[in-house]
Every structure is written in structure tokens, then in C-alpha cells.
Image: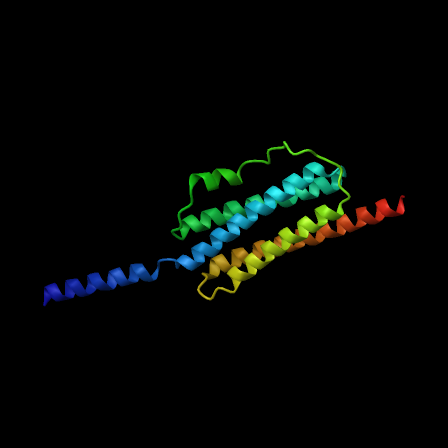
Length: 172
């Protein structure tokens, strides 16, 4: 009887430890978000190299920095939830752009299209994670906070970009 009870409690403990394991689909979605943040960060750093306007360049670099900060938070949460990240992934987020790209003159419209594509990619990925029914509440709050912060940055950037484009058209 004692042996039976020991085995019973042991099996309950094993079941409880499996219940607290994060589902692989959540870790996969968080990793995809991490990769999307890296792509957008790199894109904004490269675009900032091509922009002459100091205000716009600084705004783009601020958005890239915010994406980097969110990615670092996300990496910590992925590891806390039991996910494994390669060291290469971790170091990629903490590097700056190469700076080797030719900062050619752009008309701004191409850069705006690239930024819109990056924004759409990020928003889709964030919403995909937020629609996950098994997402932990604290991770959901962090994802929602990041989404709201990025949406605010994107709207400010679009307003600044529109103002600068209108000023340059009016000045011609």
C-alpha cells in the first residue's frame, strides 16, 4: 500500500511538471516574433543610413532601438519559458548594422513602402501571438505593451515622414 501511494504521488508530480511546460507552438510563435523584430530593426538601421534629414534619421534609429529592447525582453521570456536560443541569435540582436551600405539619395517613397511592409509584418506577428489561447497572462501583457509601443512609434514616424515629404514638395 505504501509503495502504491509513493508511485501515485510520483506520477502526480510528473503530470504536474508536464502541465507547467510551455507548449512548443507558443515558443515557436515567440521566436518568429523575435526574428521579425530583428528584420525590422535591421531595415530601419539601413534606412536611417540613407536618410539625410536628421529628425527622421533619429526617429528611425529610435524605432530600431525600441525593437532591439523588445527583442531582448522577448529573448529573456523565451528562455524563462523553457525555450532554447542559439548564441548566434542573441549576438545578432546586439549588433549594429554594418554601415557598409551606400547611403544613396532616396526619394523617400521607397523607404516609406519598406517601413510599411515591416510594420505590417510586425503587427501580423504580434496579433498572431495575442490570438493564441494558451498564452500566459503575463506574456500576453508584455506582448500587448510592446504592440502598443510600436504602434505609437509607427504613427509618430508616419506623421513626421508625411510632414517632411509635404514640406519638401511645397518647397520645390
